[in-house]
Structures are given as structure tokens and as C-alpha cells.
Length: 431
Image (tube, rainbow, N blue to C red; front, side, top):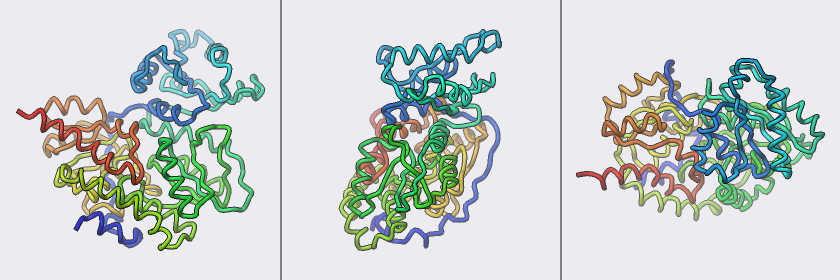
């Protein structure tokens, strides 16, 4: 019998296999992308916003490369490049910023929302973008709304750029005084995945459902004491706490990765709205069966494979749970940049009891452990992947998982296939 078919019938609250897991903490050299990378999926999702990074030429090259677009494509992001005079304090950075903003708005007169995004250079010189946003809001008299957040990579990993952005938006969300219970799904999802989830929620009878970020900033959801939060991404602790501070309550659930993760994610939402078990099974049985069938086609390649996660995206723990429980992989180590027990506890309870989870990074030590273990697959960042590949170790770029639709029943097979690709490539290139 398939393990995932058996385990998915066990209520989540009775599973305590890894409930007492305590991550080992490491401090030292890290290797992660910076938070500016999150602009790539945020600007695709929020369709009426422009992202202006206040940074260096390196920042501009990073975003350009991550987006994979040509300069003449005119995407909805740009970089106001800090020159030597700015960094040396010889120029008024606020005057320069106002000039660049005016240029952007002259070129894009239809813009209604503009994010000022801080970077490592702007934070080093203490450029106050919060005050700049307030000043520009007053200057443009409401015709354009200005927001600010930090995408700096000094102390964060790249997914936390989204957390910083969404937590800033919380301050602009209206108060919900309707008194009616509603579900607020937090975290950027591809439009097709969002539409799939919305249909499932509506079929369950949960009709008042909104998403943050919304596709338009003109329709920011309201929040109040009857708002239930359901996190779609495991790196949004700051946003969740900001919304809880506004009166919302957190629905604790694993994340919608794989058939089992999606099932339990939806089940947690259904129970918070008192949806009957019969109704829940009626709505989810068909897509669950499709997801399990899609997974069975990929499981043959992943079963028994030894896998290591190095810290990069903060998706590591949910992905490891998916690979171990639904694909039969063996987990050697799960490294994650930051561990937030409040929003990851349901995932821990689904891991084997002696799983090695490492929070933070001491890069050289982790590389030594990977080389000694010689896993079949190492999930890591680009900068680490290429050297390991040169040493004969197969790798998977973790950032690719951020740019692919991987949540939900319909994407479960695609998610497993992403991990199969480097293994298949290795087989085809074998001499």
C-alpha cells in the first residue's frame, strides 16, 4: 500500500512523529540570494504596481538576470542606481530619488502604485525610504501611492523580501467591521493555482475568501477579528504576526505541497469553518486521486534516494516532508535559513522523529557533511550547486521552485518531476 495513501487518512493532530524535533543552530558564513529576488514574482502577481529598487549596479544586474528579460522589455521594475557621490555623502540622495521617481512616472503616467525597495547600499548609508514614501505621497497628492520595504540581503534570505513587502501592506489594509467570518490566504501564488484553490474553497462552502497579495493593490482585503489566516508560504512569519496584531487568527496547517500537504491544508481551513467531513471528502476525493496518480508515476525515480537540503528558500522543511512521505526519499539533513516554530510546527509533526534539521548555516561545515554523505541529490542555491556538480554530486536549484507552480493537487506530480529532472539528466549523461 502507498505510504501517502495510508498517512493521509490519519488526522493531523494525532501525528506526533517529529513534534519534539528541535533544530540544531549553526552560525557562520552563509550563501543565500538577497531579498530583491522576490520582486520577480511579486511584480508578476501585483499587476498594478511598479518596484523601484534604490541600490547599486549589482542590484540591477541581479534582478535583470533573475527575471530573464531583455532591457527593452520594460518590465514593472527598475533600479535607481546609487553613484559614488551618493555613497560618499556628496549628493542629496532624497533629491536624486525624487528626480528618478519623476522620470519613472513621466514614462509610465498610468502608474498608481510604486514601491521603494531598500537594498544593502541604501541601508548602509541610512537612506530613510519610509520618510521618502510619506513625502512622495504628500507631493503627488494621492494620484500615486508610495510604499516602502527592505529587500536587503544583509540579514535575510531571498524569500523574506516578500515577507517584508506584505507586512508593510498590512498597515494599508482596511478594517473589517462586517462581523462575518472570512478566510485570508497569505503568500504569492501563481494565478492558475489561486484560481484552483478558490474553486475548492467555494465548493466546500467557504465563499468569503481573499488573497494577499491581491492582483491589484486597489482591492486590498479588509482584516478584522473574524479573519482566519491560512499561510500558503512558510516564510511569512512577520506578515502573519502583523495580521494577528490586527485581530486576525492563524489557522495552523502544513503547506499545500504535494497531495497530502494540500489535503491537510484544505482540511485545516474546512474545520475552522465547521465544514463536515463528508462534505470535505466529497469535494477533495477526485483531485486527491488525480494527485496521487500523478505522484505514483514519479515516485519510482525518487523512492530510496538520499536527499540533502542546504538552507536557501525556507521551503526546505515542507519540501523535505513531501519528498519523504509521498515520494519515499531518505532525508539526510534539512538545512533552513530561519526556523519559525509558530508557522512550521504542523510540518515538524509529520517528519520522522530523528530527522536532522539545521537552522542557519556554517557553510564549510555543511559542505563537508554533504561531501562525506554523497547524497543522490542536494537541494541548494546556485552558487553552491555548480561547484558540487563539478565534484560529481547531483544538485537541484532551490530558486527554481520559487518560479514554478508547485502548490495544490494539480501540481503535485509536477513538483515531484522537478526533483526527478537532475536524476534523469544524470542517467542520460552517464558513460
